[in-house]
Length: 219
Ligand code: AMP
Image (cartoon, rainbow, N blue to C red; front, side, top):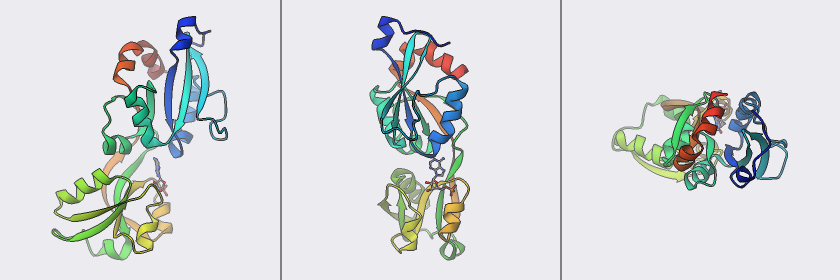
């Protein structure tokens, strides 16, 4: 229900942190369905904070930020709720509630490598490999479990390039269609986790704005 804000609620908007990029493309139809679209085109505006509608007297506003930062804004209470991939939640383990699997941004977190290397089999126990990733903890945990010493090379994106230039033996990244891997001569070796985007909530916000958040979830 879209209402005029009361004076009190103007001071207490509901702030929703949205992940930029591929997840945002999948999030906008969900927001449209729930009658919660931002008033501006978030793909073209340079604004980082964009107004939304007024829901049950509370104005909604959106923060358009990097996926890893969604966890930080929600954890710090600067955003009440956020939408972020499970890959980011597994890597950063923020102290947030995770009330809903939105079933968008479906992909998988995989170990991948050059076809010729992967065909030789998984790295042997006791071997050393270089792994390019932005999922440092998850990658380290995986290789440790298999007795492989992984030198983690942290990258912020385009991990697929690292093996091509001889900087890494494997990458750990999310894969959806597999097109980027194929275009760069890489193949999947092991799937670590199935991934989809989740609604997350700051625990204090969830307690104080539970009915509003529930209303949105039910939409
Ligand atoms: P694809 O070629 O469809 O397998 O997509 C792979 C590229 O898109 C990689 O660079 C990934 O980091 C990125 N990617 C794939 N799926 C997602 C997702 N759900 N969220 C964020 N990035 C993704």
